[in-house]
Length: 478
Figure 1 (cartoon, rainbow, N blue to C red):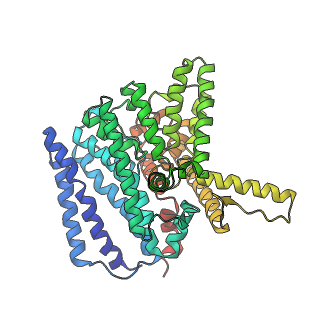
Figure 2 (cartoon, helix red, strand yellow):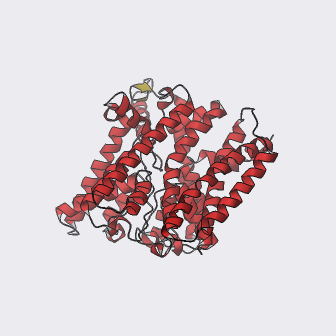
């Protein structure tokens, strides 16, 4: 791995990352709040970026695989460290600040701030903005950067979105990335306008738009969406969380070419089926247990199902107080996530769908050993290496979940908190159950546990392989 190539890329990356700090500075100026919490990180990042750019000019050579993996993984880590500085300058302990920042850039929504509303409006605005950037950022990295790795980049993209690698929106990857950002911005502006129309303040409309369309979940209020206690507002969030959890390439096609792109897509139909099924079960369980009336059971069920499945993590009610059965259903949804090519985290619906198709094929081969049974997705045959990569992904994913859960349990945490905290961060969901429930804070976790969960968020948002490959001895051999 050529260090000059890596440092030559990280220079421009720092220029870009530092530029976003200007936005919350303007918000701080508007509200008459201290500017130094953003000015100091901004100046520091600019100085480092200038040094990198001055001494390590960007190389024209194509990146090799190792350099690409390292650049992608380190970019997210650098962003989390840089963006944690404003929290520190406002008095948040360093580990909590890094936790909050990593949760922001990875669009996780798990918070380590015990008293959210005590912080300045500009910092909470910044908190939401990092999630908006991180929500689409993962798509930008995979679509705009990883294809430069050649075969490795194409294989990773195909593993994340099987079948889509032959459906580029534009011949050039960068043009495709611009289109995805355009769709993202259009949906964001639409949501902001609708929230303003129904009566939210400009500040609330912006901060909640940032964290709903990005499937992220940070709210400037400790009680999350329950603060509004308004079915209409909750319904708007349901719609945009649902759209954020769907494939953005299909959004573009639905708007500009084929109106039926979404409803013809197998993954989207399975995504919709999961939402309907889980909602109906929750409604039945909550009504049967006499927790709510049938109307309220539907209202809270559909909101929490979509919020958890899309890994947004908003809470319209303290679902940790629900009976065990509904809580267990939400726990299972934390393992799934939204669609590939969306702003949500998790395993992704398409992986689950293809795994079920693969299991069906194996069962049929038991009955008919000589039968050749292809696996199809959207009427296209799925290559064997895609299935193998999905199986490998899931094995590693479950292994990381098991290891992180075990380490957390060794810190003295209870069973429910341990499991839910682990999957809530690895799947970039946000809130868990127990001590890390929707109305609680991850501040309750010991500092070593927070470091484990920070790693979980980083690994989960980068689709596991990008980070895990850095830990293999083969990666560092010449």
